Length: 141
Image 1 (cartoon, one colour):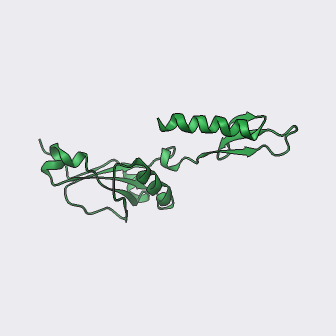
Image 2 (cartoon, one colour; image 1 turned 90 degrees about the vertical axis):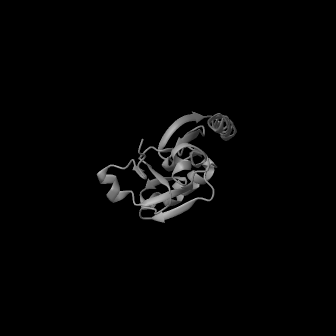
Image 3 (cartoon, one colour; image 1 turned 90 degrees about the horizontal axis):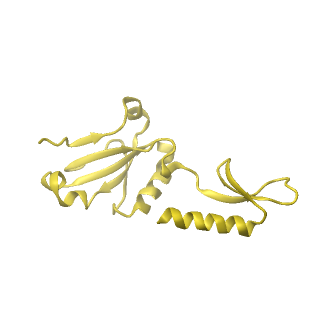
């Protein structure tokens, strides 16, 4: 079986727009099979240049690639390279949930929102923050 040296998940249109790459050497996939046979496996995420910092933070938080590197243009690496794509709605580029007061509400109401999209309202900041903390704990499981 022949394994391509580069597997690029971008569409032709994304090749023109998603020109920043964030990732690095994948120790796990380099330890067996084609990754081992080809001298290593690299995983990178192609993104819009404006999303670079958010994608870099997301890749670092994954914890499976260390060190994390950033390239402007296609990386030239030894071994196998898999290019994943950061699309709209990807966890790396979704704004975080946050607690804020609903302006002009009487009595005061608090909301949990992601950007302009509210996901719940609560009578106190403490209650909203408790719900958000519970949500974040569930997401991390």
